[in-house]
Image (cartoon, rainbow, N blue to C red):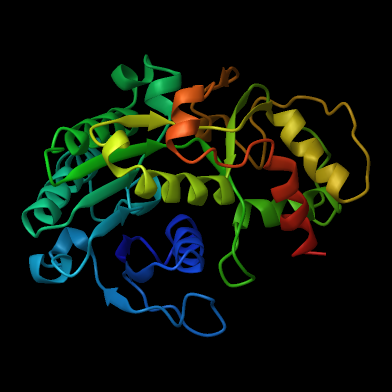
Length: 303
């Protein structure tokens, strides 16, 4: 099966590319920069460019049976020249991504799998107060509305993702947490209040493969998926355990230096999600209770 992963040079898309290739897919990745050795993505066929600029054409898309989209915009992607951040997110996620999915449909692509965000499922009030969350809901809804016979459109909505691929495709936050609990940052140990739902990159890649295998059953569906609901203190203690430091009752700091209040959608509260048995079955019964296993791998890559 010929598969294109838009955003395939990043952590989410790159992990999916490696997983799908291991299952026998002919995978092409797309991104703004070309992966260089020793990146494990360096050997993949590449369409270099930005979908927002029309760099992925209808002719490109016509070569693929499946397109996986893992290139949604968040605050990190807003150009410095952009004055209205909310308008950029709503325009990019809410309008440009569904338009790209429509281009894929018109090019003859059989399946479009979109990777979105779980926040609008877990905390619907954020749709009103947060333009990013609103843009993600519009994005998912606009894509699945395109589903029709011959074109399966699905949106997967994962939470906070855990994992990395290699030293050249690694999670900066995980690296900070390892150094934090090694005492290298010179900061007293603590944790933010509240918590969030977590999912590993491994589980997400398995869910993507499940969506491909169950194309017709997932078409027209937005599926919110997660693994474990953890407080930040519990998640931080996973790193302590993996570093053989044991667990500890960490004091809570509202504006934590590594996870500041402004970066937490739930503020001092928790944003949790319970995945339905139906969603997990539709997505191939992806791995569960995998977060600590992924944290151990993250730590092992760094010590």
